[in-house]
Length: 225
Image (cartoon, one colour):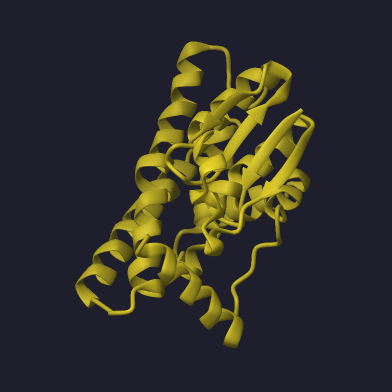
């Protein structure tokens, strides 16, 4: 049994989608990030970085894996799914996984900080990170003009990338003119396992009104910790 420590963020949803795709048995432990549960000693004992997600594989003597990319690789190898055994094909998957880990995630995260959460609006920072996100989206779109999925076949590269790119509007981004990326979002997002995984631990949503202000306030608190 896999125990998943997670929250309603793109990085957390990567793992719930993966677990739904593989059919591995798992339980969910939702951490309340606004209350800094991820910084408590019992959680830091398994994830010293104090971030989500983390898994504990109770079938393997309570083996712990943190960092979402590492978890995806571990679960792919454990299940024998969504990561090819052929070394060249595996390398292609890992290249696009690293593209998400090193590019899409960090840049969209910074776009979110400066566009949504920072108490001071800095136009230079907003423009810089939104422009870089758009450039990365164009790289994805070009790739998807020649392949159905990022590594050819559906893989952990798509699972890692979808939860981030699908939140483009929250980052103040547009996918207008990126027809291949739009088609990929629709195709991946319609998969039953993706729909189920994206609803764990809570359905994705863009809060409005007072809920939106409360959401942003909680995010701002976490930025200074």
